[in-house]
Image (cartoon, rainbow, N blue to C red; front, side, top):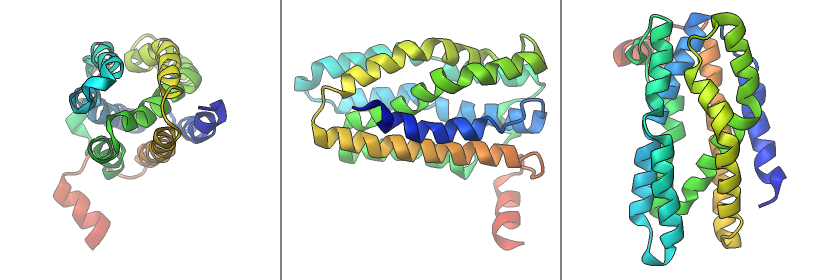
Length: 220
C-alpha cells in the first residue's frame, strides 16, 4: 500500500486535533471520555476479527491475538487521565460521532472480512505516531506530568505498530487493500468529526442525559 493512501486521510485528523484546546477541561475531558468509549472496544474488535479468520489465515490470526495483548486495558489510561482532571467517563455523553467511529467495524469484519479492521488500525496508529507527540507536548505544558498517560503511550508505541500493520496489509490482495483503504478514509473522517464535537463542547453541554440530548438536538 502506497504511503499517500493512508497519509492524506490522516492529515485531516491531525489538522482537527491541532485545534483542540487541552487547557479547556470541558474540551479535553470530553476528548478523553470519548477516547475511553471507543478504545474500550479495541481488544474486543481484535478478538472478534480473530474468531472470524480461517485456518488458512493463521499468521493473521496470530497477529490479531498478539495485538490484543498490546492493546489490553488502554482505556484505563484515558480513565486515569480523566481522574487527574477530577472527572470520569460517565460525566460525558457517549457521542453519536464516537458510536459512528467504532460501531461499523463489527459490520465490516462480518461482511467484508476480518482484515478490513486493518483500515481502522492503520488510520488510528499512523495518526498517533505522527500527530500525538505534538499534542502530548501541549498537555505537558498545560498539565505537567498529569492527564497525559494515554497520549504519551500511543505517541511512543504506535510507530512500531504501524510498521507491522503496513507490512501485513501490503501482502493482501488488491481488492482487500481497496476495502482497507475505504476504512482508512472513513475512520479518519469520523474521528475528525468526533474531535470537532469535543472542541464544540467548549460552548455546548455534552454531559447531558440521552433524553436531554434528544430534546435539545431534535425537538428544541
